[in-house]
Amino acid sequence: MKIKLTVRPVTIGERSLFMVAVPQRVTGTKRVRKYFGTPSEAQSYIENLWTKGYVHADFRENGEASTGTLTYWTEKFLAELYNRGKLPTWNKARLILRNRLCQHLGWRPINSITRDDIMGWQNTVNGSEHNKANHQRYVRWFFRWCVEEIEDSPITRSPMRTIKRIHPGHINPVLLTPPEFSLCLQYAEANHVQLLAWLCLGGFHGIRTEEIIRMDWHHLDWKNGYIHVLNPKAVKGWRPRHIKMSEGLRRHVEPVALPSGLILPGKTSMVVQLRLHRLRETMLEDAGIKEWPKNTLRHSFKSYHEALNGSHAETQHEMGHSNPHMTRYGYGTDTAGGFFVTKELAEEWFAL
Image (cartoon, rainbow, N blue to C red; front, side, top):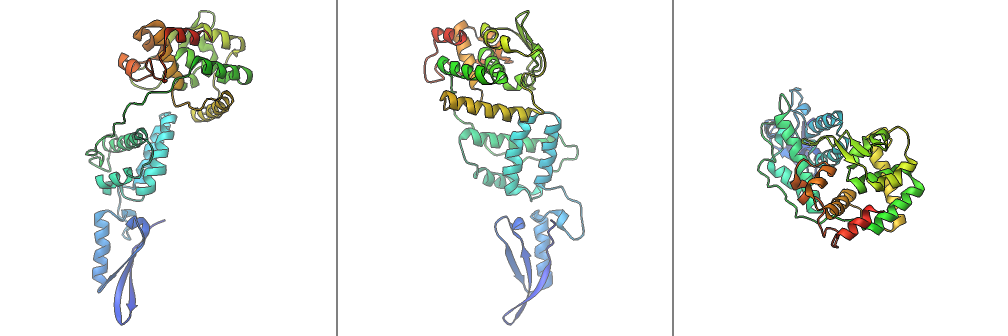
């Protein structure tokens, strides 16, 4: 819907005035009525709003070209992410940019948005420091894309450039204990082959969910004893890797493995993630496990594998990290689950 600001003659008492009604989507707070003594004063007020960027140029009567609203460029950004195939990233960006940022500032021309506008929106974000940092990270990425990657950029500088980054403190990840993992395996064996394969590939080998979604059953080379992760996470520095198959994977998955097809079938990555989430919730309820944050299987694998082998380099290769610092400091530690991960516990884990 286009906004058209007009000057209307009104009579208040014995005075003849000229009114401009400014709607909420222009003021950002509530509808405002402004009164002036002459038509020229009222028209100057409207022109002043246009100059400040509070009224999108598409709303002007003369139809001048505009730089586009924040919503317009957000949709362009999301469409590019979707076309690149980054569906998990696209989904998170959609929630933050379209559903949250654009609700506050979407009607504004992108070149009128200031640091104070972003700070005001940022103060409305609730949740943990990690959640706030994620919101800031996606918005920073969006404005950097507008400045650096668009040929005819609508803005010359990002309004995020002088906003201090949020650095959340380190939170120890949640680790599964061997008995908890055993309950999960028992449930999956009795109910769902795909869930069982996901648990074993993540728990015994630390393979990412995004990588398992891209894996076919023939990537599990039962004859030669190797797992071929040929489609790794699409991040710079990650490469395909070939992992020696564990006895735990053979023990649980080989008897029920399918001859071909995707390990986690689904029309899109998002469909698979949602289906997997529903299966996991049912499994956790059955096993009586209350916490399962993101990457729980990878955090658990890292801690137990490192305790068993005492080698950062071997664990780094298994997990597909490009540098040892990510393996050593980015994932679970010896006491990450609130208990000390000993070699005996690690042996129990991989013997399940």
